Image (cartoon, rainbow, N blue to C red; front, side, top):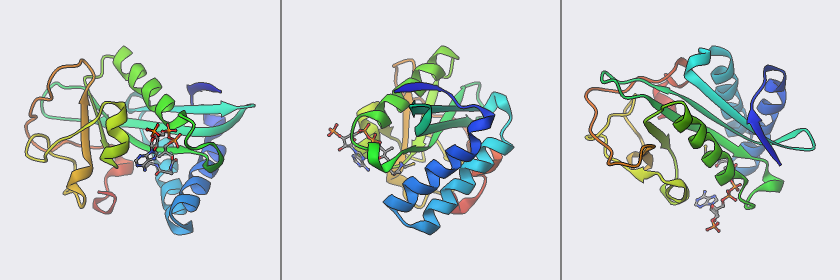
Length: 178
Ligand SMILES: CC(C)(COP(=O)(O)OP(=O)(O)OC[C@H]1O[C@@H](n2cnc3c(N)ncnc32)[C@H](O)[C@@H]1OP(=O)(O)O)[C@@H](O)C(=O)NCCC(=O)NCCS
């Protein structure tokens, strides 16, 4: 398996991967919703505000992950991990964790201080995330599942409170996502 930054020519395959994976894990509607979100992420985000990585086997994408910028009034540099998908036939083999850890290393190399995600604490705690409160750091919108608001300090220290509400990229600027 090879992990590398996603390329423009892979967009259609990446979209298909998300449709398929989330259709299998949830349903067709969710598959199409996430695939549209991913298309928006790829098409509407400034290149300075996005990292995307693909895991490929025999040149075919079998996993994918995106990180997009979260901005604060402070000088902290932060990115949001979302969404990640591993093709249904390849799940449970460590590919998800490999992709997440690869992405976090790339963020660290690029002087990113905080990584956030919004998901299952049991899964993401295995790759260094911890639950944080909205009082400590506010998400871009009110959270319907506050227990899924997760963060890690990529420099290894404590997570410090940040003033004000964070701002996400355009693709995530929809209260229904949160
Ligand atoms: C979630 C997902 C990315 C994980 O990728 P993966 O390659 O299957 O996971 P890995 O093999 O790296 O990790 C496996 C570990 O995570 C655990 N795990 C996997 N999914 C989990 C979940 N939803 N909740 C809790 N633990 C989970 C496994 O039990 C395993 O733990 P173990 O090593 O202690 O046995 C993948 O299953 C997927 O694409 N699922 C459907 C889409 C989705 O839910 N994406 C995440 C939300 S954006």
